[in-house]
Image (cartoon, rainbow, N blue to C red; front, side, top):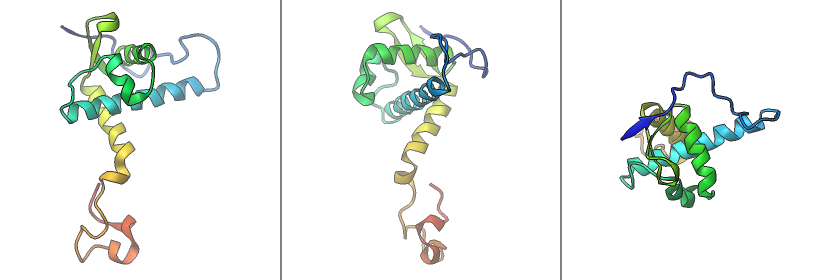
Amino acid sequence: MWDRVGLYVGKGVDPMASGGTDDGGAALEALRWRDEILGVLFWLRGEGIMPDAAASDLGGFLSADPWMLRDHLERLTAEGYLDRAAAGEDARYRLNDLGNREGGRAFADDFAELTGAAHGECGPGCSCHRHGPGACKIPA
């Protein structure tokens, strides 16, 4: 039922496939959307909210129209981050192994400041007591 479309090997994926020239803005925008979508899918699955999602499911989390999200989801599927079931408006997408790793990284990056240890949780011998919270030995 689930099909993997494309294999990501770091080449053959052209963020400028729509034509035209750009100074890298389109590539940066594609990376931004990749991290946003994979991070949300990682969170949704991790919290047990939904193991896979349609473009219409993501619109409320990403403040974007479903048609635009569908285009990004299809690109991420072609790049090897997602697996897709069905096609068209009924398509549902889920993270595969590569998507899970990248989604976890994106989620961790976005919430790094909120998921670390609080100042003082580490114990009396921690260097943060002398040098401030940034020196805390407990990894985030």
